[in-house]
Amino acid sequence: MNWFLKGLKKGIKTEKFPKTNPIDIAPWSTELNGSGNVNCPTKAIDNGSWNSERCIYCRRCYPLYSPTGNIDIFKVNKKNNIFRRSFYVYPIDIGTCGGCNLELKLISSPQYDMTRFGIFFTNTPRHADALIIMGVMTEGMKEPLLNAYEAMPEPKLIIALGVCAISGGILGTGSQIEPDVIIPGCPPNPYTILKALIEAKGDKE
Amino acid sequence: MRRLIGQLGKFCLYSDTYFEGTCPHIENEEIANSPYGAFNFTYGPSAGGLFESVGIDINTFGEYIRNIKVNPNYKKREIRILDKSIEDAILYIERINAAFSASHVISFLSAIDKISESDIDSDVLNLRILQIEMERIRNNLFVIERLVESAGFQVPLYQLQYLIENVNRKIGKLFGHRYFFGVNSLRKININDPKVDFTGIEREFKTIYEDIIENRIFIDRLQGNGIIKDERSIGPAARAAGFYYDARIEDEFLPYKDFDFKISTYNSADAFGRLIVRSEEIFESLRIISQIKVKSKEYKIKVNDGEGIGRVESPSGDLAYFVKVNNGKVVNIDLLSPSSINIELFSKSMVKNIFTDFPFNWESFGIWISEVGVRFI
Ligand code: SF4
Ligand code: SF4
Image 1 (cartoon, rainbow over the protein chains, first blue to last red):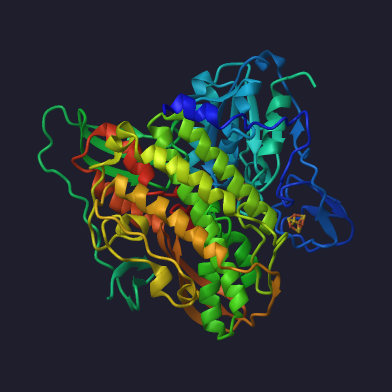
Image 2: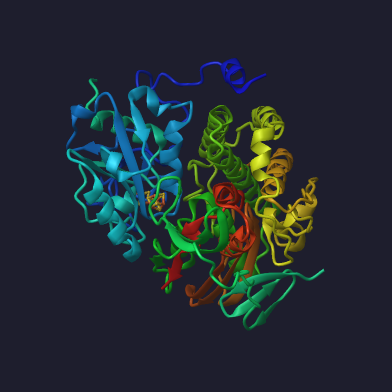
């Protein structure tokens, strides 16, 4: 049987998300809720409130704080509906553990199928509408990051994916480029990533 | 039989012992006399097609590769771990390489267990085996996915991605986190939901596996590509060359001998052999997992001062830590990552191959730059 028929035989695997609720989310990648003073290693809990931009999901605050299952922990400060039909993203790893890379990649899996929203990966910043920055800022990646940023045409969006790129998490410092979109998590789960990208490209609700 | 594994800080590590001093290097075969038309070409550090940031310097003569050097230092991270408590150190260790996070933490904890002389409950050790084997399944699927992606085979690519996502969801359901972060500590292995069933995975992978190894175009790209038969090999690269090397049977700290499974080997020593070994290992890992009863477990390890070495069989081969503890704090730590050895093997195997072989051969070693580009401070 040829590959095309083999593919057809499997049927549709894509989920209805975001029209329906996400299924099977690992709890320790979602919003935390609770109260009390905790010795949080990244000060993600300070004065009793939880800051997604610093949380590395180490569970030290459990059971005072526990995951709610809510995936909407991202922030879109700037979106651009010029990208509604097609949104090309260029991922750059400036010092990751590989976790953010793996989860980002998985939004192209059949369960999520990012292409149905017109989201694609591109191999060059020249063709990119958004730069997705992952990892802590390392010395050797400062120049490649700047080069990628400058190579991109306007208008462009900057997305910080994962706590390392946002705040440095536990390992270092963030990317230093002001992001338009932040997607917290260590690593962020694919549902959160996909939903944030859909919003960033200016899709109607 | 004693085999040499590699450099672990000031020690040269062997399968059954270690000595202070430097291990002999694997020499990359360079071809002398640069002929007319030979030139250097740098790929990366941030280039489409590369999963992580890495610089690859290729000396080539048209299609023919004369020499290749991998530079993992672009994304080198300084990990501030010295003088941290063991519990805090775990937070750092699990973020060295997400793909092998369980292997890293369990190797580190094995070193701690050894110096602590604690008797670790067999249920705890079995739960550690469970994590490593699940990690192996996920990683091997990922390596195979990268191979079919390099060949541009969209249907099996998406079938494999579907399966990887399914495995991730099962890991996430069982342990609460898809990459085992926050799972291990000195008191407990965090189990979220012990009733996770892995049975569908074998059936699903079997059909994909049969389809891809029947595909002449695909296997042509792998057969004869990146041949390396070297006694210094580790992991799937060694086993694909017929060496019966595996920390699971050599290091008795994790009780693999209690499980019924076989070490998969092959005898082609090329990228195809590495694909076969990794695929067969998925079935064997599933077999191990099916023999483990999952239940939550609390325990207590009292950390002693001293130094020790822990080693596990990660999805890409031997992974070892040397740890020195003083007053409950990590005062010295060294890592031997499988990727650092596999980079040397890859570089050696690439010489005299042609340029188009490069992506397939690179992916077949399952190298993670994140675990090589690390400096402990
Ligand atoms: S999970 Fe860890 S990092 Fe996140 S808030 Fe709790 S203690 Fe802080
Ligand atoms: S945010 Fe977490 S998963 Fe992402 S690179 Fe950093 S340590 Fe890894």
